[in-house]
Length: 83
View 1 (cartoon, rainbow, N blue to C red):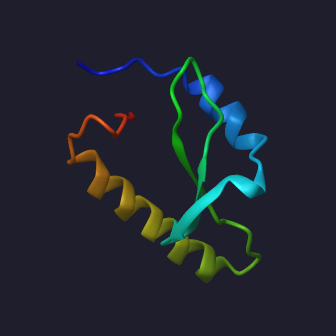
View 2 (cartoon, rainbow, N blue to C red):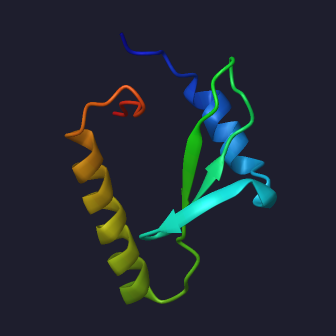
């Protein structure tokens, strides 16, 4: 059974991330452990888009899209689905 996720709460947590909650990094972002949201702790990846170089931004966005495409095909109880 899949949990329903309050994306607004996840988004707001991502905006107020605590840097000392970093649990990893990879690809084009860093992964942080969330505070409990409705009793569930999430790992939230924040992608790095901070560049003024158009080619670098395009490269990063391409990698992010590929990562999303990879994860959309994985069905696991520890992963949430996204649209």
